Image 1 (cartoon, one colour):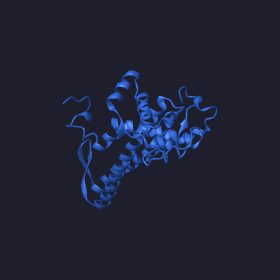
Image 2: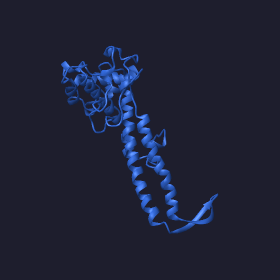
Image 3: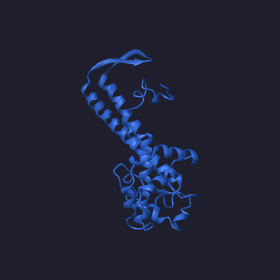
Image 4: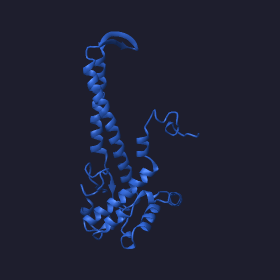
Length: 235
């Protein structure tokens, strides 16, 4: 079995990850997030009167990753160097003609690909947060349970003065709590996306970008970013 990285081999992949996190960053997940991004863009534009009422609902109802023709998508990506053109072509074939022309309206490839990647990262962070929280809860219990259980302390890998196992658990706990705080900071500072159109000016949407500055209406799915960050238009 050929393996380019440890994540590709059955011997080591579960040492450095889980099936859940691999699925989060799988090809299918990425394309699913691209579709979610296109549907969310249509909803945001409809809410602001950029595209006709009812358009976003039709686009969303007819769009699903299960419909993807993967060989065709791969072939189109080889031609143009990215998957968005082929994806939009396939979505347009699923959606009635009256609404299909509004798919990807005013956006550029990087806008959609950037948002899809951030959606994957957001889901990945949620997985890490869950496991981190479980570990923190366990260490909180262990540090209390074993607060008086003696063990050998160590220095330079050698036995040193005695400590308690509860104290050692408390040291681990302190570090993991700081990591939990860092994850919150990452979500607030780094889970941001661009939306600027082909040249970063939003020129295709008119002279004002107010209609595309969205908050909670930007994405509708529970797995989306809508409760965590706003779309920031490029300057």
